[in-house]
Amino acid sequence: MIAFLERFVPEPEPTEPLQPDPEQKPTLLLTDLVDLQGTINFTSPTHLGKDFGGIHETKPLAAIHAAVTEDIARVIKSASRSPILTVAARGNGHSINGQAMAHNGLVIDMQKMDNRIQLIGSGSGSGSELRYVDVGGGVLWEDLLTRCVKEFGYGPRSWTDYLGLTIGGTLSNAGISGQAFRFGPQISNVSELEVVTGKGDIVVCSNTQCSELFFSVLGGLGQFGIITRAQILLQPIPHKVRWIRLIYAEFDEFASDAEFVITREDSGDDDDSFDYVEGFAFVNSNDPVNGWPSVPLGSNQLFDPTQIPESGNPVLYCLELALNYRGQDDVASIDKTVAHKLQQLRFARDLKFEIDLSYVEFILRVKRVEQEAKANGIWDTPHPWLNIFVSKHDIGEFNRLIFKKILKNGIGGPMLIYPLLKNKWDLRTSVVLPEGEIFYLVALLRFSLPYPKGPPLEDMIAQNQEILQCCMTNGIDFKLYLPHYRNGEQWETHFGKQWPRFVEMKAGFDPMAILAPGQRIFSRTR
Ligand code: FAD
Image (cartoon, rainbow, N blue to C red; front, side, top):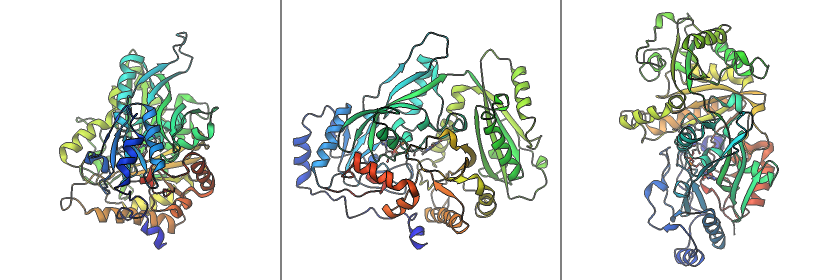
């Protein structure tokens, strides 16, 4: 148990594996990399040693601005000739625990690559054929959205809530938002990848070609290869969205309605389904950040606490839904459709909030939050976020012990909770999930002012540990999403029965453990 507790404490950077010999490194790099089309910067910019989490900081040996995929292959091959060098692909550095860092290693700034975006599959115009976009691994999802809207009229089916993340960064984890119940996570919407393995081989892989590499890389935490290109499945872009928030005082009603909505499509009753399903818990008080005021969608909407059903619960629940529609659909018909879809749900009838907005505004909704957070100074403070998948079987207990007790005063940011369907995930990928067909994502997204205006970082980390400890003690079936552990033993526990395969794939595709050292799964070998 003590070992378990240790794994979430921010620790100093490891001293053992990654100490290059200063005499050796420049010679090695300069001789091996003369053909590089991009550049190497030995006075690498400080941001490459930091991330969004703001908890860890390190110093890479050099930053690589790769111009082409072959540059990445050369860099990895060069690193393999050193006994100690490691290589980290850095997407947008939006990890929490130093996952995109390489202490004394080489950091490849993926956003600096030639990141093309190209539509594939023109089709007959009937709209029935599949379309894909071929996109560089360092492209931000928000840039992909812009191109898709401007030029293609087709866009990805599965998003993240926030789009300032790279294609390669989210595909190395899963990529989840309110569309995942229907289309699966982003890793379920990829048809082909171009990858540079830890041996420096450039491989195009898919479901049918080098499929072991393809599935290992998806959700593979950067361990098997660097994604330089991905083909992503598209759908026609809708014009508008009705965005809805419904309030519940009782967790059981919230959860059973959320599960009802996400399973409608599977039951063939598409009519009752929505295009986006998420949810969150919030504090039953007028606290401006954690409480009732955090719920309304428009500045003209007010949360009337007299409408909260009698329950005495310290937290309430919000089911968040969205319905896509076409520009020519009239509002009255959308009202009717929505009313029909909501009629079986048990939310507090006078605590319903809805707005209509363009599809792009909806998909970019967290951009506004980012701008506000930057203005308030809470974007650049430490973010000890915790993301957990919890099985449906244990989510009631999780609510009772964690939301209603440990988190009853909130966390200074959103506490997301919503169900997902395992049958939309390809179990051949590297992601590990809890047992059961339905599981919940719980995301504790702390945004606090710097201490002493906000809580000390240590207290927030300690609360995360308390939550995980509570899950362990009470036998709650969970897996960390965007996981962070200190050593191979803890990773073995995380992967469970998938660990032997993970190790085997590592031996096959990155046998010297050159890639993604910031995950701390494997140590560099010679
Ligand atoms: P980085 O942090 O740069 O890298 C993450 C890991 O992937 C590192 O190990 C890195 O070495 C590796 N990597 C990066 N690029 C590549 C590549 N091309 N090939 C192989 N490996 C690579 N996640 C969700 O699922 N849904 C959300 O809604 C969501 N919202 C978020 C909102 C915010 C504000 C933040 C900070 C994070 C959010 N995340 C969300 C988490 C996010 O998906 C992950 O942190 C993701 O890794 C960040 O992408 P990045 O491009 O910044 O990756």
